[in-house]
Image (cartoon, rainbow, N blue to C red; front, top):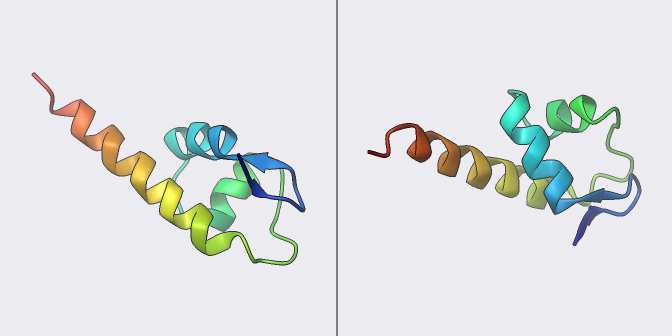
Length: 63
């Protein structure tokens, strides 16, 4: 699913970038070589990034 129509950023792109970089949605967009245009996607993008990182940190402690 596309999260950012302006930059054609898909949820999978965002999740992958979230695992490789730190920071907020704007920093994650920058890691993808993009920057927010209209900004309507930033709230949803931030939620996805936080969800991805929370799941990733749990995986580190899995036995």
